[in-house]
Image 1 (spheres, rainbow, N blue to C red):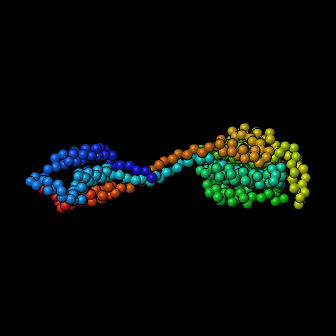
Image 2 (image 1 turned 90 degrees about the vertical axis):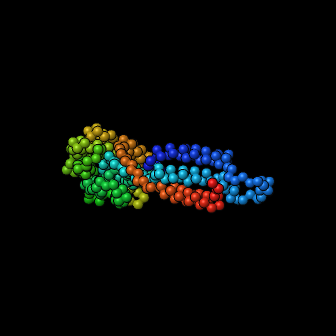
Image 3 (image 1 turned 180 degrees about the vertical axis):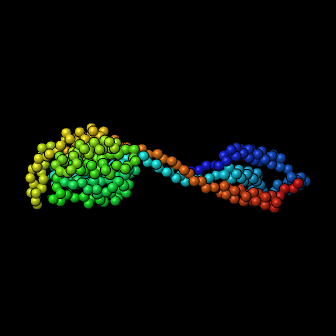
Length: 328
């Protein structure tokens, strides 16, 4: 809520009114003889009327009423701010690996996929003004959610993501990246980004990762590959309470090449905290530029000063015409 006077120059009359009121008060105080009475001693012993005590304040009553009139003429206004946000946002597509290797539990107590999903969810929460989409890939790439600002819906789709069926297992890295690039093809955002989260190497699909990266570069899309998983071997569940140690086959040279080719950056996350830090870094690197325009809608408040002023002037006039009437 904001406050202003539409004609503030009229407030310059307030000191003039106050000065005139003070001069009138002094004049009435210093030269207040009305009627000479021969028996002054007798009148001195008479009780003082309450109206007589009120009478010296009459100039101030008039002055206060005139000050309120000046305030009303200056047109006090109260306004409500309406903020219009124009966002030059970032369009982001997260391409998430859902192959069976993402079930490795080196991010205990949860597996890689669960940790990645929760991390991506927190990342989405921080992109209030951006459109975000979700691609999942294993042996095939599927769009789970197109670019949207409905982040609640997007997080619901993300929560429902599970591992690929056995007949669709594998790591079609190129297909996943190509699907994400395709989702950004018609974007007019100032910045277009793919966050590629994977723990393996390309072994499926008709489109190679380098071809998909070349397409991303041609469209001005930056790719941030994120390699997840510990070095060496990781425990993978194969039954109830049973695990086998599986060798990590992350193709880091290829992921670095994709990042360099598209102007992005490669990150490695070997635990849950590191993965959260990676997404926090990407969040800072791809900041959203927001332009705000503020409008203020004002409503008139002059009546709040005018009505009391008229009442006080009426009271002043009534008193001078009745109880406080002066003899000419």
